[in-house]
Structure formats: structure tokens, C-alpha cells
Amino acid sequence: MIDWIPVVFVVFKVLIFGACMFFAIKWHYDQGKKGMDKRALLRTGSKLVAIFLLALMAVLLFTFGLAKMLGMDLSLP
Image (tube, rainbow, N blue to C red; front, top):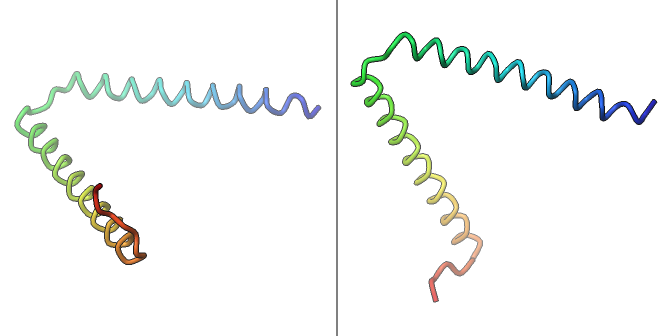
């Protein structure tokens, strides 16, 4: 009986992921049919890039600040 547990879980996982992928692709296909304003798409994309870069800078500053506080040597050779 215990040998069937991985088989059942893998089959369940494949079925769930397959259904989710189907509905995700269908949703994106339907959204593509609607069409979108290119200007709004560009504005949204630039906002996402700006947010990503700000988050990246925050993580870098936090990492280097923590490393400096812990006394790590961050100088280049």
C-alpha cells in the first residue's frame, strides 16, 4: 500500500498543474483577444521595472549594511 502513495501524489500533481496551465493559457489568450492600449502597457511595464529596481537596491543596501555590521570584509582585491 505504501508503494502507491508516490504514484497517487505524482498523478494528482500532474492533473492539477495541467488544469491550472490550461486555464492560465486560456485566460491569457482571451486577454490577448481584447487588445490593450500600447501606451498603458508601456506605462505599466515601466512602473514594474522601476519597482523591481528599487526593491533590488533595497535588498543590496540591506545585505551590504548587514555584512558591514557583522564585520565582513567587502573590499575588492
